[in-house]
Image (cartoon, rainbow, N blue to C red; front, top):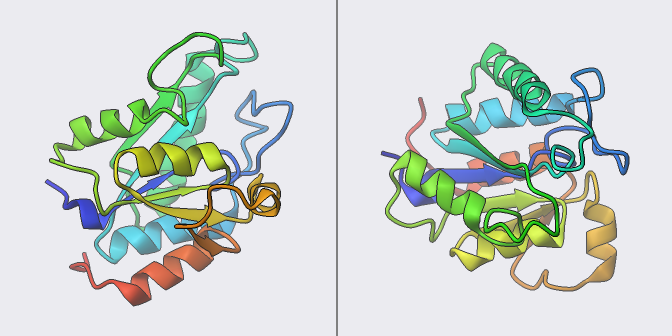
Length: 189
């Protein structure tokens, strides 16, 4: 069972892969940041547990289906594993903003799903890394430490200067991973 201090929860679009206002609708449109794939592997090799929490309202909007989403996630897992890393769990919300679900960020449902699936007693002290305020709000609701990356919508989020008082801010996931691995000394794998 992972320790909450060794858990890093990542948003997907804009943190791990390029984002699009038109949604990422196919495997061809899912373009990972190479440095993000390496960063996930680095965190894993340093002893961190990696999970992903991603809103995927394009499913509810009919832009793509869950089978297509699973193809993207299978590709992500394969790329990370080819770099020597591992993703412990991927939680996604397929609902639209008006569906009144409990999983769509900024609500913490996806993070609570990760907590349950990984058997962690509390998420307090874990990390939530995102490119939007709603990512950080979901994390802070369950005691995660917030980290904002400037990729994806991160620069726009940073420009708004709202809700970032407790966040550490990095250029991208690779820069955050470098910092975190220097700050903390989990048990390397």
